[in-house]
Image (cartoon, rainbow, N blue to C red; front, side, top):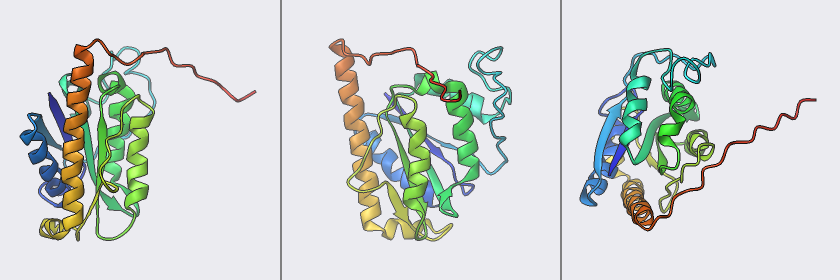
Length: 209
């Protein structure tokens, strides 16, 4: 089993990476393979709704960048964690553009697999940021993995050492890692017994008359 951890910060080894590394360590201890993917600090175009991925693209975005690479990686992954710093009480715009395109073009590769959001902030805006990310999971049949508090750590921008001083935040990350491992092993055991999620054709209701 494998979990992909996405770092939505422009700082490769900053606060978000520190939080994801704590989770990664716990997952590895529980026999879960991991890969941390740094989205980087180059611009990521937003989804334009061109429908290329649904038609000629065969599940690939018309913009051939990291999003398409990750769509392929998601095929063989079993779980996902998306991490972001908090900017103006919302996730990084780079991560949201990445996730919008990843979920629009590659939703089939993520569906029915557990996922979690992790946010890092100096002070506030964390729950609003978690809400924005979690909505991607909830519209795509993905179990949302919890911890013993909202999935957040605190530290000044580019101060990963402060994250390590946030003892409660570090515990939250560790519990999240254990819960992700527990859920993945439960899903694996369920599949061995023949239990699989019911897949239905989605109904689209248009309320415009």
